[in-house]
Amino acid sequence: MNHPEPKPTLLDELEEISDVPTLPHVATQLITLLDDPDVSFKRVATLIEEDPPLVAKILKLINSGYYHLAKEIRDVKQAIVYLGLDEIRNLVFAMSVYSTFYNVKRSEYFDYSQFWVHSAGTAKMAMVLSKYLKMSSYSSTYIAGLLHDFGRLVLQFFFSEQYQKVFQKSMEENVPLIVAERNELGLTHAQVGFWLAERWGLPESIALVMLNHHEVTEKDLEQNPLLALVHFANTITNIWGATLEPNPPSMGLDEDPLWLEFCQLHPDLRALPMLEMLQVFDMHLEEAESFVEKMEQIKKITD
Image 1 (cartoon, rainbow, N blue to C red):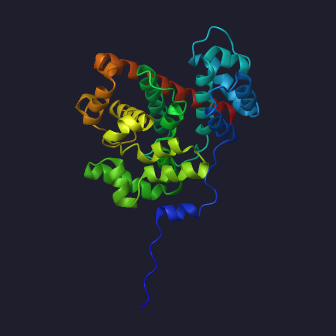
Image 2 (cartoon, rainbow, N blue to C red):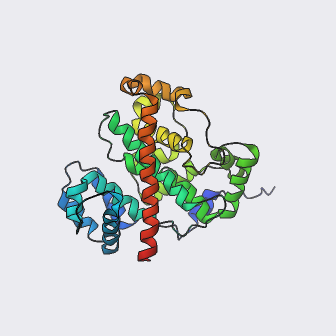
Image 3 (spheres, rainbow, N blue to C red):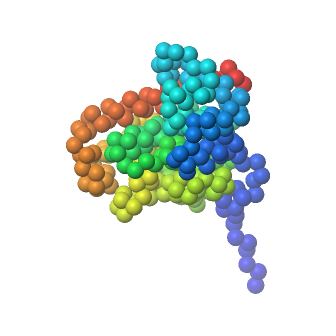
């Protein structure tokens, strides 16, 4: 008896695609340097200087007023001195991957700029939480937040028509995008993001954030704080309206059982008035919007 061949999944189809965008060299090397807490300014500057077009974009952004510096920055070493190693590293990574999927098809549902506001906003929020809670230094926090939804870029890039149906179903059935993805595609952007992370050779900690940022458990709050930080940062940016979700969450943080449990683990968080905390988050969301706006301007000038 002949059995029908199993229907290929989207992941099977992705495995057959040869032109999946690759992570820029500078970004790849920066991730490697994240593991070295003693990395020198000189080493980071030398790496960045290997990509002159990127250097030109960095200096344009820094001198555009984005950082409100009184003095013009003329080279990468000077930029590191003024902004600090962490900020430069995060900025360079964001700028170097910004153009990776820039040619993704736009649609009435998928706005690339809005996607980046959400991604950059989530990265900023995760850093705010990490620093405010005085948690152990997580050098990967910004990058994990920035890349958490990159599976959506892959879906839009290679399966745009199918992915538009996901948005339509999400709207029609009033369900989150991830539910519509699972129902329509048989997999989620989180699974696709994990596939991309493995293809790019990202550290396991970041890959698992890309896979599980919608699937956080009480155990993760204590055992996997990086995942928890990105999960809550993602929730905050969605609530704040920086989202691709047709149905943004209406539940506030103070109604989220996981968030309340997180506050139990970190009492300092409960001591900060919610309104004041949200004002801090709002400020960093504005920073994310400004970053994307400047990046759009710079890309138009340099392309």
